[in-house]
Length: 186
Length: 317
Image 1 (cartoon, helix red, strand yellow):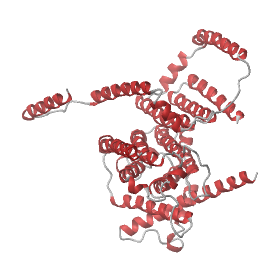
Image 2 (cartoon, chains in turn red, orange):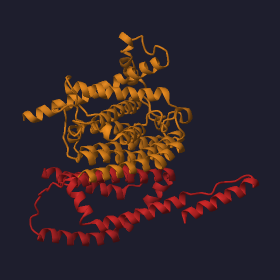
Image 3 (spheres, helix red, strand yellow):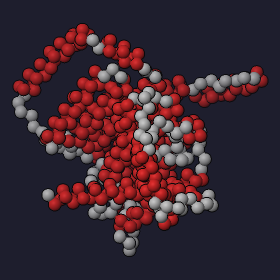
Image 4 (cartoon, one colour):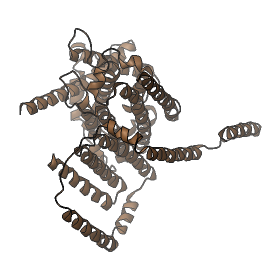
C-alpha cells in the first residue's frame, strides 16, 4: 500500500502544479479537482477514510462545482487566457521561485535530518472522529457553526430584494407589509 | 489468488448485468409509458418489441460522432464518461446479496454520496464545453439543482445512520431484520426519494434538460455514442437510486423463501417502475420553484427529522 501512497502523492503534486500553470480557468479548476481526489486517496491510505470521503463530498463535489459555476457565469474567453499568459512570464516567476526554493531546501534538510519516516496507517472510524469532534474540539465546532451562521445570515440579507411595485395603490400596502417583516426580523 | 479471481469475476458480472439492464430499461420505459397512455409502444422488432434496444444501439453507434468546432474539445469528450463512471463506481458498495458485493466499505454510505456528488461534473462540464447558450443554461440549472439536493440527500440518510449506528451498508441492511427503515424513518424515505429523483435529473425534475425550453439542455450538442453515454448514465442512475432506496429503507436483500438476489431485484424493479410512472404522470416544475421547494420545505423537514430521530435515540438509550 506504500506504493499507492507515493503514486497518489505524485498525482497530487503534479495536478497542483498544473493548477498554477494553466491559462484557462476551467482547466485549472479541473486539475484542482484531480488534486483534491488525490488528497482524498492519501487520507484513505493513511486510515482516515471518513476524512477522505468528506474531502470528496464537500470539496470536490460541492465547493469546486460552485467555483466552476461562477467561472462559467463569468464567460471568460480567449482574452482571459491571453492575459493569464502575459502574467505568467518567466520574469514574474523568478522571485517567487527563488524564495520557494529556499523554503524547499529548508524543508528537505528538516525531512532528511528527522530520520526515516514510516508509513503506518492507523484506521480511524467515523465514530472516533465524531467523539473527538463533540468532546475535545467542541469549542471549535461551535465557533465554526457561529461563523457559518453569520455567512448564512449575510447570504439571506443579500438575497432579499425589494418587490417591484408598478401601481401606486399597491405601494402603500407593500410598504406596510415590509415594515411588519422588518419588525419580525428584529 | 483465488480471492482476486473471485472479485474480478464478480466485478465483470455486475458490470455486465448493470449495463445490460440499463439498456433494456429503454424498452421498459417506452413500453410502460405506452401502457399508461393507452397505446402499444415499441412492438415491432422481436417479441414484444424487445429488440428495439438492439436497433437503438446500432443506430447510436452508426450516427456521425460530431464535435462542434466551437466546442472545448477535450472537456467535451470526457464529460459524458464522468456520469457513467461515477454511477458505476457507486455500485461498488451496493450489497446485492450477502455474498454478492464488491467492497464492504465501513463508510459505504458516504462513498455512495461522494460518487453521486461527482456525477454533477458531467452535466456542468458537458454544458460548458458545448459553448452553446442552451447547454450552458442547462448546466447552470443542473449544477444548482444537484448541489442543493445532495444536501438533503445526505441529511435524510443521517437518521438511518443514527438508528443503525454504522455507515456500512451491510450493517444497515442487517439492522432492518425486524423493521424496515421505511417504517421507522418514513419522512427520510420520502425526502431521499425526492432528492434521488433530482440527483438523477429525471422527470419531473429534469430541469437541466427541459426540452421544451432548452432544446435538450446540457447535451444539446452531443450526438452518437457520446449522447448514448449520457443516456446510459441516466438509466444507471435510476437503477442506483432504486437499489439504494431498497438497501437503505426496504431491507435490501432480506426476505422470506426466495433467494436474496431475487428479492433485491424485485424490490429494485418496483422502484424503477415507480420512476417511470413519475415520468408518465407529473409535469415539470419551474426552476425557481424547484429550488424554493428544496431549501424552504425539504431542508427544514430533513433537519427536524434528524432532531426527532436523535432525541428518540437518546431517550431509548
